[in-house]
Image 1 (cartoon, one colour):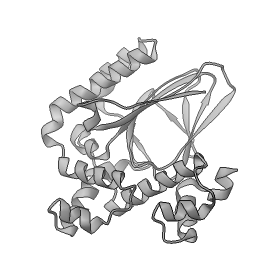
Image 2 (tube, one colour):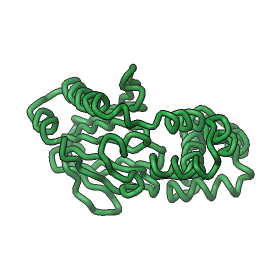
Image 3 (cartoon, one colour):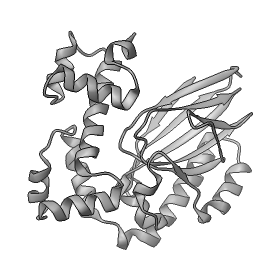
Length: 252
C-alpha cells in the first residue's frame, strides 16, 4: 500500500487539515485500514473493485460521503485494489457547509445533496490528481458560499488546542478568546460536535499514538509525561478507550 499526505495552501488550509491518499494496485484479497479518533470529520471518496465496508458496523459505504467525528475505533475493509482519498476537515465547518448538527453524525456519516455533480465528475475521471482537483473545487465552492457563517473564533480555539497537543487549559482558552467558560463550551460543542475537553483529549491521544507508532521513546512513561497524562494508568485508560487495545498490545 502507498500512502501520501498533502497539506493544502490557503484558502483550503482555513478549513482543510490535510488530504490523505491510500492506494494499492496489487489486488490484495482483503485490506483492513484501522481508523482511530483524530478530531477531524472528513469527506471520503473511494474507487474500489468490490466496495468499501465499515467494520464493526458492517455498513457498505457509497463512493462519496461525509463522515463525522470518529470516537470509537473502526476499520475500513476493502477487497482487491483500491484508491481512497480522505479530506480531513476542521470540525467547525460541518454546520456551516451542510446545515447539520455535527454531533448528530459522530461515529456516523452523511450524504449531502450537493455532491451529485462532483460525484458524477469523479466517477468519469481516472487519476488521483483529477480526483483531488475535483474535490478541492467542490469544497472551495462550498467555502465561497458559506464563509461568512463560519465561526473563526472556534477555529482559533481548535488551533490553540492542536498546537498545544491537547494540554492547554480550557478555561485559559476561553479567557484568551474573550468567552465566558460556559458560553465557550456550549458554542464549541454546537460547532464541532465535541466538548473542548473531548477534543483536547483526542488530540492528546493522537500525539501519544504518533509517538508510540514511531517508537520515539525509551520507556512508556516518557510518552505519559511528555504528553501531559497524569500517570501511566491514565494514559493506558485513554489509549484503550480510543483504540480498543493497550499501548503494549498495539505496539507489538
